[in-house]
Every structure is written in structure tokens, then in C-alpha cells.
Amino acid sequence: ILKEQLRNLDLSPTLFLQSALKEFTDDTENELRESVTGIKTNAVIACVVFFFALVFSHMLSLRGFSKMDQDIKKSHSMLMMLPSEVFVRVPQIKKLVQNQ
Image (cartoon, rainbow, N blue to C red):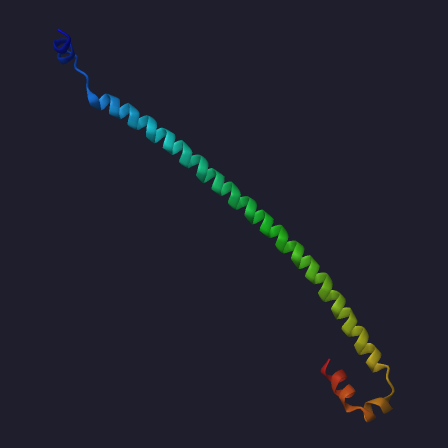
């Protein structure tokens, strides 16, 4: 009797497969969405950190270059204060002043 009752039940295996497959794909889709969102968030954070590091390094180098420029101008003005006899005796100083 039990086998006959089971035969009379019209169990469609596709119903089980469809619901299981839909649940699996929904879970997988949610995981993929979360991972893509995480990757995008990490990329934005990395870009912001890189931008601030770039600005910070630019500010540090700008400070160094402006100090070096001031030192060069100071050296040039001090060389210009030398008497003309020094330029006659040491022609390298004259070339140095002319190159600046």
C-alpha cells in the first residue's frame, strides 16, 4: 500500500531543485554584492590615503626646495659683494656668478 501511495503522489523533483537553486543563487548573489561593495570601499579608502600622502610629500618637498632656493640666492648675493679684484684673480668665481 505504501508504494502505491507514493506512486500516486505527484512529487515534481523540479520544485525541490528550483527552490534550492534559487536559494543558492540568492545567497551567492548577496555574497558577491557584499564583496564588490567591500572592494569598492577599500579602493576609495586607498585613493584618499594616497591623495593625502601625495599632498603631504609635496608640502615637505616644497619646503625643502624653497629653503634651497633661498640659500642659492643668498650665496649669489654674497658672491656679488666680492670686490672686482677677486673676480679678476679667480675667473671660476666669475663663471659661477654668470651661470646663476
